Length: 277
Ligand code: C2E
Ligand code: CA
Ligand code: CA
Ligand code: CA
Image (cartoon, rainbow, N blue to C red; front, side):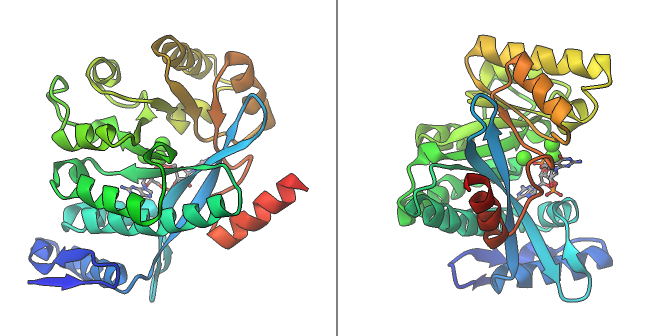
């Protein structure tokens, strides 16, 4: 049994066969939220350290649940992953955020988009095809899209990247290793995966101004990216002191509450307008 939402995303209710009653309840609500288009996407700015320019935004999913209120991504994603809804959710977030990116670019904003990807999406044969169709629909150059993937769930056999990964890369979409440094095999992935960007996990960035070990780790990741010739992004930048350190070290891009929390598009519009005044 398949149902189609207005954007044509197929959701199979057979996928809801889960053990936990509570989870079935929430998964059912989530399925309806995806179908009815009631998930929303917030965007957080990414800023170049060389010239303070806004270079992109990261899309982060939000769910305004009728009873529970605003549900955060950390609660939504595990439910989606465990109930077979993650591909539909990701396509929904991509659809919303590419629509918004097309609007911003039409207004003359030279910004790129980053979207988070659960590893499960890479074993779905239709996923790369649907991404290509969305890029085409919104006339977005694939080079303006970065998919952020956490190393944790990637194939344990790092010598053979998941086929979906290669297909996305062949389209010209950029790949970023998210939460870099927190996994067990960060370095071995780098030998085999065609990545364009490292995103330093915020657990290293948050206290780097006061913790010598954290600073040493951030510095090493920045050097590593430099030597590999790929972009390096620091997330979790909350203070001016951290920002200055990152600039001294040679990090390319920063993201964090210092600039802005993730915001709905109309509020990010105000943020961007205030910045260029
Ligand atoms: P992430 O990709 O590592 O995203 C960064 C998280 O850190 C976001 O939480 C963001 O709000 C938060 N953050 C940003 N700046 C700061 C800061 O300066 N300080 C601190 N303390 N936190 C900061 P959020 O939105 O709750 O997302 C949590 C995680 O959920 C994300 O971690 C990502 O792994 C996942 N996620 C979010 N949206 C999606 C999605 O559409 N698809 C998938 N598959 N995963 C998503
Ligand atoms: Ca991310
Ligand atoms: Ca992170
Ligand atoms: Ca994360």
